[in-house]
Image (cartoon, rainbow, N blue to C red; front, side, top):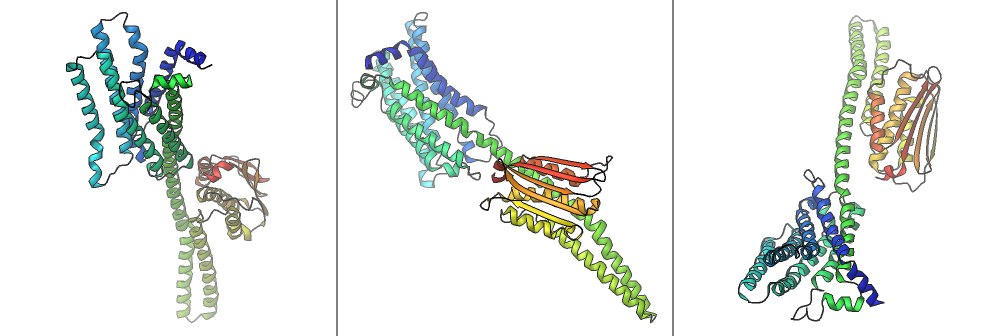
Length: 472
């Protein structure tokens, strides 16, 4: 059985080496193509060394596939030059992997800053000894390069992969702050485990050599016992690493989406403030100004000793000022659309019962939400903003006698409905800021907003939000 498996992989050696190199090439290329220029995540500034490792290591592995083919067409000297270049790529790729691992722990304390230069120092030392052996040892080039391959794996690959694995595992929360996405944290740790496995398969199980431990623990001995060449396991671990890293790259898109969402919300808040300022100027300020004029008139009458009309005027002024105070309180409440907690049922009940429409029409409120539903405050704020604008429009324009607000969780969605029996929206109506704001909030929620109206038959506002968006 073992001999049969070994024979199968020997026959398909070229295919496996092609796939092996392709795995690491995809690793480097996928990260390189991901735009990280505007990212504020620390991880984005550490990935360049992983890109270099993936691309260089892929070229090295493809050398095992291509160089034997070139032996037929090239001179012995040219083939040896290719083998030297292939070995140099191996050492350089492992040095990049070690540099990636060390950079994961940056910023380093002052007394440990010298560690950043360890990969370069080891690479230069390894390269210098290899060149010296090639020039003066008298051994065949292929034998010297085998020794260099083994040394690179012990000195660069094993510690480099272990440091990178430890860095991804221990520094994962710091690397993706401030997002702290749980899924991305798990993927970083999966990538760390894959690198730890790669450290064992590529840094411990090396080509057979004349000195310990390469003469005992090596790829040939492993294949004779297991029946599967070690590079198959390296390919599988590389595939796990690639899948984890590619899925992890979604973090940068999440970061961009969060920043765009924050910009959009900032714009909405700015527009909301402009609207409130306009309402304060056009309505509340005019009411206060009218009260002032009335009081001035009363003072003039009082001076003329006409006290009876003066009393009536003062009473009217007080009523106007009370109305202005109520409007100011309403506007101030609108500025706090996002609650500090995420209890949608309580917040919605409070919003509906303090709205102006509560004193103008019969108001029915039906809420069917699981008691343990802890929605994100930002999502709750958008839902409340849409309901608040709907009720405000009814109070100002509909002259409705009955209003029904229904909120329920059904089939994985949150459904919000506001229905009134008022005048409805005129057919020639041009949507203003309020309705535009409702659609913008719905878009930020990833929700569907439908406003259905018929003149003299009322208006129906339907909001359908995927539950996943309420927790995001």
